[in-house]
Image (cartoon, rainbow, N blue to C red; front, side, top):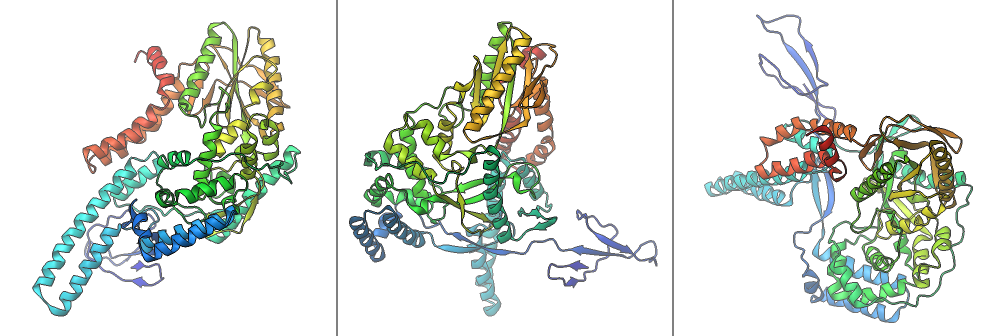
Length: 626
C-alpha cells in the first residue's frame, strides 16, 4: 500500500522472498497465518516523491551581446530609444532619468529574454530547457502515431527517445561535475546521495517563533525583517549612542566622470544574470552600454548631487552563517542591489582607491588575503620570540560590526581626508536606506535601515576599512595589530611578565573604548588570548570586569595557532576533516570521468587539507620529520 501526497492509498501486490529498501519510516505488519514457510507482509509506504511545481525564469537561449543592436533597429526599439532620449534631454532629475532608462532596459529584456515556466521537483534541479523541448517533440510524435498508426511516426518517436536519453545523461553529468567540485561539503554529499538514488531533502527555510515552527514564506520574510530592524535598535541602545536623526551636510558635486572611466568599468564588469529590485540583470545593463553610454554618463554625474531613491532600497536575502537554522540570529542580511547602482559604486570605489586604510588591514584589498594576514601575524610572533620577549596575542569579538557603521561618525573621522564632493556622495549613499526581505519569492514590507555599510554592495567593504583605519592609533603602548575585515589580532609583548599583564589590560581597555566610540559592540565574554612560547604557564588578566585566562591555542582565520607554533593541532584537525570525505571520493571515482574526479579531489580534498599551507607546512614538516 502506497500512501500518496493527496492522501489516497494505492494497493500493489507482489510475491517476494526478500524485501530490500532504503526507506527508514517503513511501516509493516506480518500476517500470523503463514503460507508454507512464507509469511504475508503488508507494508505502508509514504510516497516521498516531491510534487512538481512551476517556477518562472527568464529564457536566455536567444540572447547575445549583439542583441541590443538588433533591438534598436526594430520599430519597438526605435520608438523606445527616441522616448528615452527626449526624456534625458529635458530632465535634470536623476530619479526621472533612471526611470526612463529602466523602462527602456526592461522592454529590451522582455524582448530578448522573456519569462518562461520551468517545472522543478527540487529548487536546485531545474529541468534543462533542451531536454524539455525534446520531450515535448517526442510526445507529439507518439501522440500522432497513436492516431495514425504510421510506422514513420513510430520510428521518429524512437529516434527522439534515444536523443532525449543521451541529452539527459549529458545534462546529468554536467550537473554532477559542477556539484562535485563545490567547496560546500553539504552539496558534495548531496551529489553522492543523488547518484546512489537516495532521497535528497528539499532545502526550505523554517524558523521557531514562540515555540512553533513557521514555514510560510510571507511570515518568514516579515519575521526576518522585524529581527534585522530591531537588532540594530537594541545594539544602539546598548552603546548609549542614539540613532542618527539627520545626516551631515551635503555639498553640490564639483566633479564629473568621463566616458573613458565608465568604459573601463563596464569592460571589467562581470555579466551576471541576477537582479535587484529593478529587475535588470547586470549582463543586460552592461551590454546595453553600447547604445546608452551617454545616457549612463549623464545619470551617474547627476547622482553625484543626489542618489535616486530606488537605489537606496535593497532586496535582502537571509544567508545562514552557522548554528541552528531555526534561529533568526544565525542569519546574515545580504543585500541584492540594482545593477546600475553597482556600476556607480565602482566609479566611486576607483576614486577611493588612492586613500590608505592602514597597513594592518588585509581584508578587501588587492594582493591581500587571509594567507597574507596569517603570514604577517606569524612573522611578528616569531620575531618577538627571537628577541626573548613574552608574547600574548588577543582577539576581541564584535557583534554585527558591518551593521553598526554610523554615517555621522564616518563624516567626522574622514571629512579632512576625502574630497568634499566624494564625501557628500558617500554620505548620501549611506543615508536614508531601506530594505525589503525576500524569502522564497515572498517579500516583506519596506523597513528603514538607519545604520550599516550595506553588506553585498561594492562600496561597503572599502567604507568599513576606512571607518576602522584609525584604531591602531588608540593604543597607549607599542603593539602590532593585524586585521582581516572585522577580525583583529593584537600582539602585545614585553620583557617582564608583570609588565606584560599591565600593558595587556591597558591595551584591551583602550581598544574597547576606541571601538565603542565608533558605535560598535564588544562581546567581552568571547575575548580570546594565547601566550606563545614553549611550556609557559597561563596568565590571567582583567578585560572590562571579565577575568580572561590565556589558552594554549587560538583559531586565526581558519588556521589553529598553538602555543609552541608546531601546528600539530591544525594538521590533525585538517586530516580528520578530509578523512570523512574519503568514502565519498571512492564512491565518485567509479561514476565520474577521470577529469571530473580530479576536479572533485582538488576542490574538496586538497582545498581543505592544504588551506593556509604557506603558514604551517614548512615548519610542521621540519618538526615532525615528514
